Length: 244
Image (cartoon, rainbow, N blue to C red):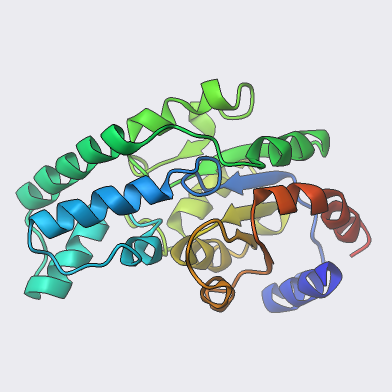
């Protein structure tokens, strides 16, 4: 299955070489078990402002910047963009709720994946649509030695955000690698779309409530049920890449 996925990736990208030197990790739902708190905070904030939404909608929107998410809600509800003031005040309200709810729990299996990646001699970077300082600033404490601020792409760095490839293209630039020299680990359809659009082999980990088919339809090259499963299969993945 892995070899087939690699072959399809190379064919799709019209590449003959696949030699990973870096892994670009999404943050929420990949490194932190935080998406349930984001979804709750977003849904409660949206309801407070009479914006049309459901809790699951925010798993589909995951990866967008906060401003982009608020714009989508305003378009859906009022058929117009949100004003700068609306975007600012609503995002602040959502951030306050998120910080109240979030327990900062690391995603199960993420530390094991990072150890495997480091043992493989690959760089580790974060590419997130989040602007939550509470988690971004905590990465070094949760995963000491893996993530440096200059090797992160966050909501503060991008203009377009996921599903546009911009965040992952910036991640490649910060890593100093080409698309065929990287892997993406994502849990969200829009993040997967962004990784694929950037030409990177994209691994989905389905740590949320969405159906597997949604992540596969977004273009994921491989899919695992969680980070623990990816950690267990990492050596097989690296061996398959070596002989591809």
